[in-house]
Length: 128
Image 1: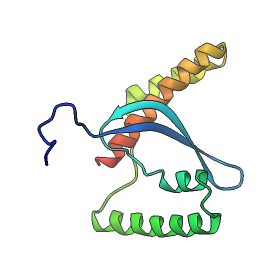
Image 2: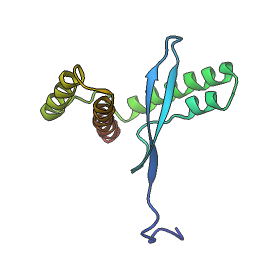
Image 3: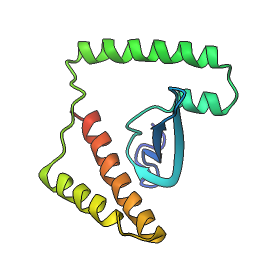
Image 4: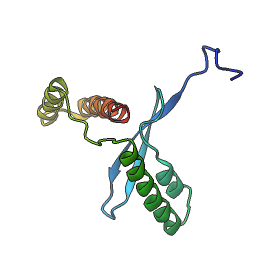
């Protein structure tokens, strides 16, 4: 509580994205962008893997985390569905169509826009 009124102190997180790997795991990519608010998802298991924690331990942690998420979702009647708004659908469709003829720098810009939409969906899902 000693910093509660300090305007320089705020809840923030490092933006990240993840993708599924062919081995069934998940790869995390930190985007080096500081975002406001709490992190919409925990990446502790992926960070544990990056730190060299044995896969058996990480796997057990993943199973325990999934069970806990299911129990919490049931207890709080949380739905995991988070539909896109019409404007989000239109923006993503535009990006996909533009990306087909884009050069490398335009693709990076498109990827950043998609990442921003994804982040807003994650934040919305957390607050549902």
